[in-house]
Image (cartoon, rainbow, N blue to C red; front, side, top):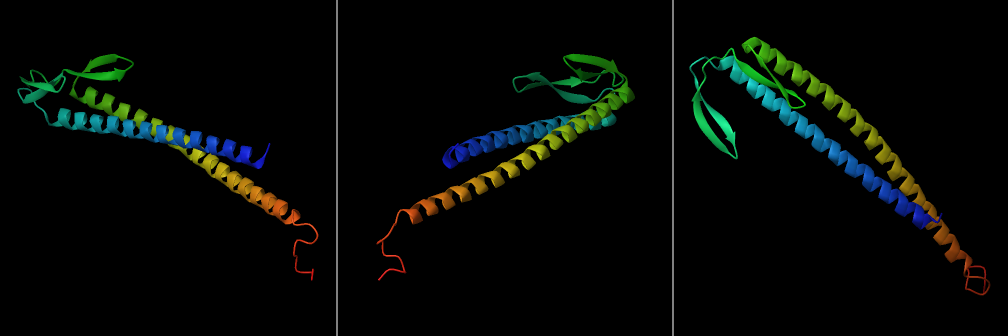
Length: 156
């Protein structure tokens, strides 16, 4: 494989790794948003009382005002399109458990990012070495083309 082909291959691999890193970083950001939503839900559950008026989302950016009939009937999404009804404290516990699972997921994705960053650094180093070798080969080829009578320092 020529030096140019090797550089192209390394460059392509580097782009792929950087794309994976960006995707994983977006995943971490999405998980953090989900954690923030759980934080907001916990705070709301802790502060709301039966009879409180709240804005209930209907979808499409539309809301309706509603009165909380009973704060001890909270439905929490569990994941995989499942939800369960909890009393106030049970709902908080479920949301905190969800947050812990999300934190574990962030740690896993962060580890993957670290591994890919190490791979990226290694590919960059290999690309630099390949580029230096290609330059050296080019310099040697240029030096070898002069031949006798090319006006070298020993000739007069």
